[in-house]
Length: 217
Length: 291
Image (tube, rainbow over all chains, first blue to last red; front, side):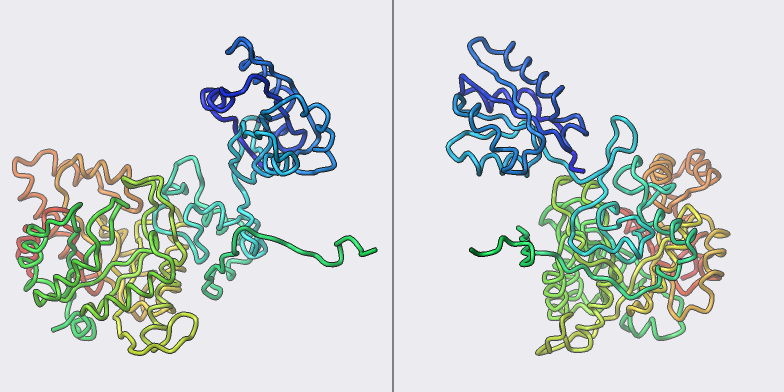
């Protein structure tokens, strides 16, 4: 899922400083699971802002997902009274809300970090960079685009120490993990394949699937 | 004799390296190069080693060619995408540079601009293939060049890779680099000749030339620093002891380096000396090593 962390409170306070009324909206999907924008976080942020400034009205809101108009529509009534909306969604959600309510000041309370998984309570690691050309079948399920700090596709650099990445000792060398995985599966030959050069996708991306589009008439 | 001619002969190869500084002053750098000129077959110029912003390798290599020195242009993939890499290679050729060492490159977080965007559009293996394409008269997507290159390409290998997986992977990558066109390899610094011999046995018969890396030890502190921070470099305790107990660090440093150089003579095809600021002492190392 998408993992985010809350911005520094000081930065959030600066963002809402011009406004007397703020609606904080949480998101019931990823942001709840990574404890960045769920009901608990919305409540805590509401309290922090309200106690910080007298005369600031803070209201709490929550919808299952902020990346879908189906759910964003539920905010329509509540949002009328508020000029500023502090979204506790990922960048996807913030933009969807901003698009749906173009006359509102939609502000991001979070910094979206990556697509990742929870390794243990309180610890999340980035797993996928959405590069658009998945090679996980050749790398024993370990992504070198994302988990190798240099995104190398033809084996590791010479910078690892004791199986850890040059960048940080708390990160394993992805290529050593790929090696162990392929060895376990009897597929070490995959390491000797054709030289890979990535064809980078153009951003921003857009996908159209004709068969899923609404029918005319 | 050019480096290429030296490589194609039977002689024991000797190369050294210089590292441009942070700024436009080249006085000391070129002084060091002129002292090394007649003692080595080629001089490498590093490409912002340790990801610290410095004067570029391309410019300095060109200055070396003006001095009659045959430089080895070190090119990393850290900072330049495939367009810039190809353009820089064509530029290097036009500026008289004939030898290239293809490297992946240190991660920017190691240097003094840690927030810069890392590129790594190519890596050492794909860069070597690209050099091969330019040498063959086409760019990497197949367009014909009006004027090709004819570089002598080289690469690096780390014989001190510190886990079984890491070493296996280094050797597989070395084979890929050879298939991609690498004609010579300069290794990461060696301090344990037995370990190096084990490595050389694993690559016995490989049709390439290997130059064992030697880094001049400046102090016990430097040795400990490298042991902690530089991947694949391991200075054994007895050498640290020598550097600690000596009353003349320079003399002992030169002795140790000469011993290592002599050791590589029996094990591989050449030596690559990295003096890291002590370039003026390299001739003394070579004297003592009988080269």
